[in-house]
Image (cartoon, rainbow, N blue to C red; front, top):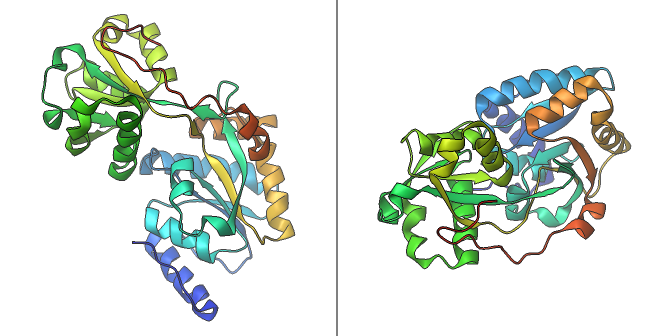
Length: 288
């Protein structure tokens, strides 16, 4: 349930309460925060990410990186924090009720593209297993994982697997871990990425050969950097700092922890969008 405050005079109080619940420390010194939420990044990784990002930011201004682990709290902050920057998955941005009041400024780049696709793969020994009995390994939250599954199954017409969204989900830290979970028998299927599947092929050829690609999602944008439409000059300066992260060693390390190489303007990324027509992967088809 998303919490939005109609009366502006109540917003500071509600925001303070939300920050306390989320474990965000208060400070007398005015900071411009970067609130971060990604359903595919675990709490333990958030801790490391905060340490590295704060090291990068402290040298460039009065900025602070603040991961938020609760989706509803993060969504509420996007409605109440007007002098802040938000990093979030494109999946969450698309679902925000107050999206019209926000502007997506930057999008992450990995392997020279701001887009990626999710794969649904299955162990070949379980092609005949009832979909409702499959355990699916995934890096994301339950809501995110089921949303991606719906995206894949609706686009590829795999009607036989429609009940897979009611399967058990096995939470894992990384996409490669999801694939390895299938190889080691902890799950029968996995949500992963094309890059991770190629990595599995390089590192674990035997496990790669056991997998079958059932389908791909539509192209998804990588992590977005978002601001309120009415934002302060300091917020604009922070956007410029973030955009230049790839030019320093600390910034590069921080980017790698988010799974990125660099940033680019969203307006420039739109023209690079791949075709929405999916390349369906049939049983026994060629692996990407």
